[in-house]
Image (cartoon, rainbow, N blue to C red; front, side):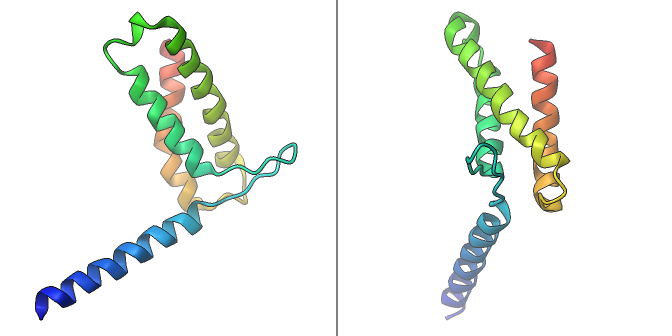
Length: 109
């Protein structure tokens, strides 16, 4: 019976955390009629940083170039969120480290 209760609690907390994170993560920014999701940009930047840190990335210069373009694009969106007063503080805190890491990576390339 205890195991069942623990499983139910974990499910409720997990679903609540996922839904809460989704709702907090959704911030729309209208620019030229386009809606943006800042957390989508966050994960795009994280993915590009992982790709650029790969040991074989120098063997694929076109891929590296595309990744750098993508990093600049999505990181610009994160910069807008950090400067936007309507972007929730929690989101700004979450993206701050990734934004700073991306800026450092762009400076070193």
